[in-house]
Length: 232
Image (tube, rainbow, N blue to C red; front, side, top):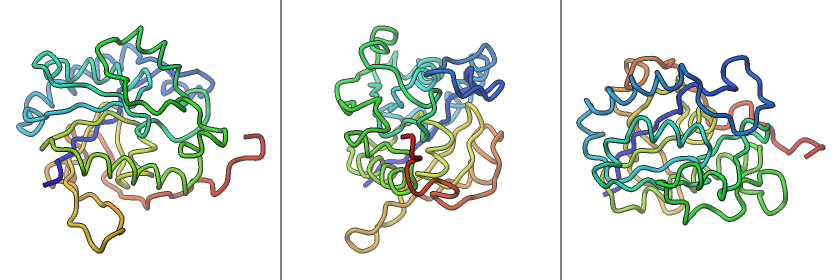
């Protein structure tokens, strides 16, 4: 049986404050750290989160920091935390491009980086086409990310990712900073049909596990570019 997913958006990071997208791989703000305290409490009180058997995070600083601040209690119990490039943010702006794994591994050595795609953090070259900022690439990356989780043996998996990718590539849902939603995989149709998620009523009706997120839905891929800009 495929796992239940607890999908989390990172807490407020430096680029979220004044929408300064020129900041490269920014860290959490003071407010972001405070948001992690509320997120941590909410997860610790959630019976499903208590059952988590794996933590997956985007390899970017703000997601790793959010994971280490909010699910440290699971890590202390021996739950593994893995970085996965599939869960990085959409665009190729500096704020959404990660740092070399050698650098983040020095900063956050408790995370397992052994299976991160070697092309990371490239998002613009032909080699990094899976991570291009296009509608086709992002929807395909969402499917690849879900396929990897669908095939995992764990019953509950926590994923820390980004609002754009979670909304436009995976769920169609809005995520506020440091809020989370819970999903099950929908029953699979014919072979080759897309992976789809069904949200638990507990997080759908109140706008996220902490109630901070908008309840409106959007179509996957909405307003994403069809092709890479000429400069890229």
